[in-house]
Image (cartoon, rainbow, N blue to C red; front, side):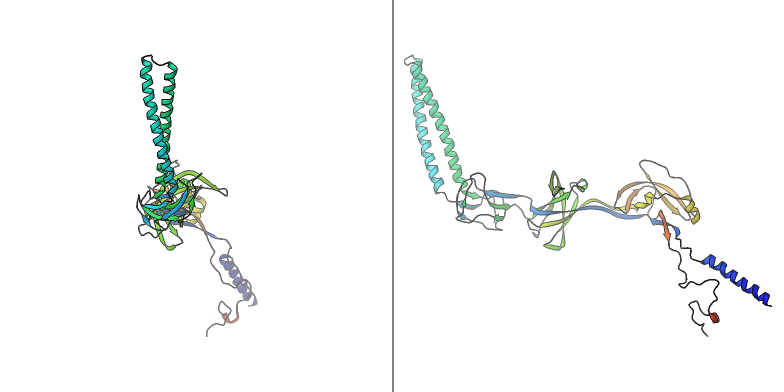
Length: 399
């Protein structure tokens, strides 16, 4: 009886050992095939930059003569028309200069007319050999000198007269005064450079943004691309525009190279003001409703041994070409290579053409699955169970 009991105990221990070996956690991850669906998506790429809002046409108005500003007729934000008088300078000195130039012109004209008559008389006498050659040459010299002096005096008179007209300052364009640098009674000197008195913007409903784009992104920017931008003054508003010009001149600041990009920025409601700093997004790529696959599906290379372990059959071999790439399509328990032509990419997904349809399942790689969770309390298979046939967590059985 004791021998029979001993063998029963040995049998129970052996069965428990086998079960433990079969169901124990291995600590290794289980490999599975990772797939994704072919989908239609919108692909877009963009670059960001900062810039300044500016009027499309902005004219700085100055003066070419020195003097005192006697009257101002416009102020900040005033709307002006082309030809409208916006300021006047003191004209007393300029009028006096014009009078003096006029008198000099009259004197030079009188001298020129007299010398011309003398020359004509001497020429007639010289032709009849009644005067010597030297007398004729002297008359010709005096006539030519008077003629030159008269021409010079005419030029001086024209200059003084034009300077007098410069004392009346007019607007060259229709627009809005956005800057005023002088006040009445102020003296301006136009000795070496033209001082700026006013800045007039032509049309604030048609603005532009001058953006500074990094050299790493400028290759993607082209004329006509869509742009959105925001300004701190209206943080909840998004404004739109288009790239109108990519300038070739580079600017280097603190070893950072940028290029200026001009963006047309319509401003019909006049909300955006000159000088605001804009945060810009330039959409360098926009494609809508195109077939796409995960980009990593284009890099998948099947491992036959791993596929066999998963019970997946490999069917066909990829065709290597320069113009196409291979994706692997899973149909049931079989994967098949398909040649596709790739398009633009948004990073995680790439547009494709040919060979696939929306809803096809493509293989993107192998993935590791964590082992199944076992009971939290580990027990030795040789240790006796809880007394009374208790439940798995050590509690007493329900009566």
